[in-house]
Image (cartoon, rainbow, N blue to C red; front, side, top):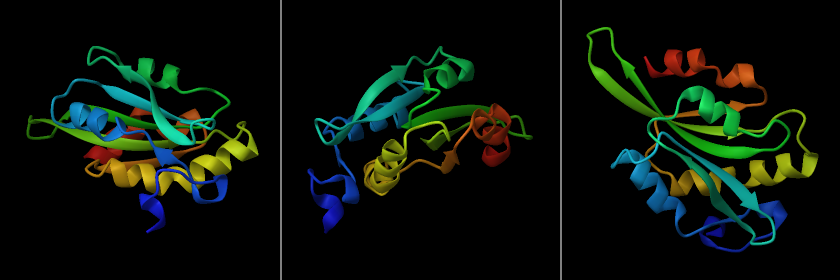
Length: 145
């Protein structure tokens, strides 16, 4: 199948760095990170981990890590308390594609999204965002409940 190839061109998306799955498991199972930001390295022709956020970092820290004019993929581990006063956590996959980013970047991230989502099997919700209002903390809160 095409998505199993580790190398590809812009029309069929990028490969995924070997440590992507391990980083996801560290966030999901070990709660080692609050968030992970992924970027496409065009020269390497793959998606790589750009940054991990410590569990002490806030949602504002996460938002500040998303570039204003370039695309990224991200995972965010959202902690919340239910109406029954139970502590829960939901992992969001965010495809960040601001309207101000380059057309080529939008195309690369769009064609590579299914490949990285396949590697990150186990997140709870997906958000496609083109501006900060679409990733406001209230959006996550509404989706998680």
